[in-house]
Image (cartoon, rainbow, N blue to C red):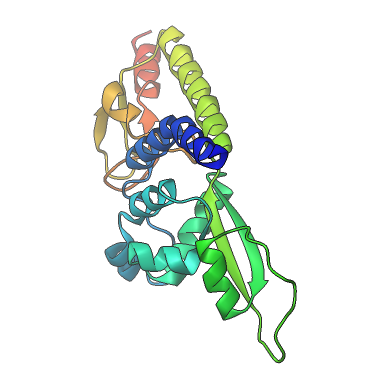
Length: 215
């Protein structure tokens, strides 16, 4: 009885964090694809995988990566690249465990279950990886990123040469301040072009140079 009450409380507590993760991945990682030796194939097969995978992780706690790949219908190798990326971003925790095929199947259904500690004779052990979302780290990262973002905009607004326009030096595409806001990258806190992923530049240098010429 007590156990069921505890589970309900955990679900209620996690709900706002689950919503946060789903919002973040759609804003910042909607078009993210892991680097691949065959980038054309990678983009075709795994575009949008970040949203699908992180959504799946919000519905589970610890899950074996092979099982997750089957659930989201993604190639296991590409999934591991994606999981490693989010591990580096502190979004995901991973745990590696040596076990037999039978125990791996049992463990994927009940993580943390007790065993008798006896190994079968001539049984081969394989390393299986498990992953889950690190909600505490995600919350801290978001708070830090928002603080940095607010400071960046405050500094720009206080600069008398600030221009409410950003340009891509690669494809020459222009963005206003509101457009640029949705293009900020979680990885380097910079604005990136949605067309070619080039880093956007605030077009204030042009104004400064014109001001110097006028003088």
